Length: 396
Ligand code: PMP
Ligand code: GLU
Image 1 (tube, rainbow, N blue to C red):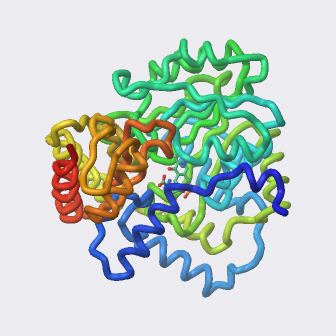
Image 2 (image 1 turned 90 degrees about the horizontal axis):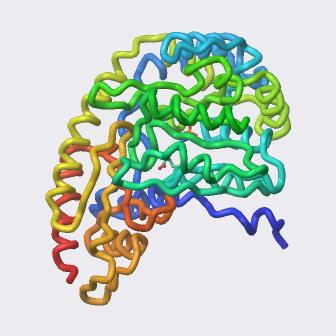
């Protein structure tokens, strides 16, 4: 008999769809995978070399639980340089991916019955981690007409005596929404007024387009910083998803609790990956620009193509590498044996009949949409879009 907790948790649908698409591809089917939540670029060579050196030097033992000092220092430097934030080592923890940092935060902060505000659409993992801690996810619906921006008054109207924290994700997965300084100032005002925490997931910080500026809410002023835990990592910025390095910066008391929790679960993140992470943060950064230029090209192409399909509307995402088109026009339509009533039906239809994989919007809390990752080559995107057009055309 499994625990009550195990019965409450759903596995990650984004990882599941990506795994399914990859296994169909391995079986020899020519599938276009828009499901991937990871850069299709290889980790830069200088980072790989640093890992190889770590192995050769025998840096293969346990390290300090929350990361080695040299990596914490590199993170402190990065937060200073990129985000104008000052932290000391005791305010930093390195974990096995940003997902793990978020998990540690949830464990350190949420008690049973606590309410955690999550603007919706949201990244799939947030509500599950809240639920894993017997806390309650409270969704705040956002709208395409507001570019999916959460309005400060909506935050305020969802706050109760039990509200513990707000999870903010900018740039956002899945919408690409990127908050500007003014939006963040308004949100910060509410947060301070009600004395709740902000968990600020900034993992897509480096993947930002059209000259937009990434602003960390923690950098607005010291009172906001004291209520914020900043989460970031190297998975997206340096194409290092498999290396499992993420980090969090926040008040010492919270970081200490997270480190204690980590000491009883995973212990340190991989020693070799930590050395690679130092090189990623302190070595040449030109790789990011190359990757970003390519993502930008694909973004423009994909969004234009999606908007050219009758019935589809798609905002231009300001950040990350996902397009989030509204596909609700097709619900209620049918063809052959398929009746499309939801984003899930549509993703199944496109997978089975058009060999195109993407993630249904319902996984992110909004059934009207689909998420397409453009972390795949422009040729694949062209091929995928043609297939989508053909398959949608057959629905009536
Ligand atoms: N936050 C968001 C919004 C993400 O999309 C991801 C990607 N999985 C993560 C956090 C976690 O990334 P990782 O655990 O690979 O650092
Ligand atoms: N963040 C990625 C995504 O949303 C990776 C998958 C996951 O970790 O759930 O697809």
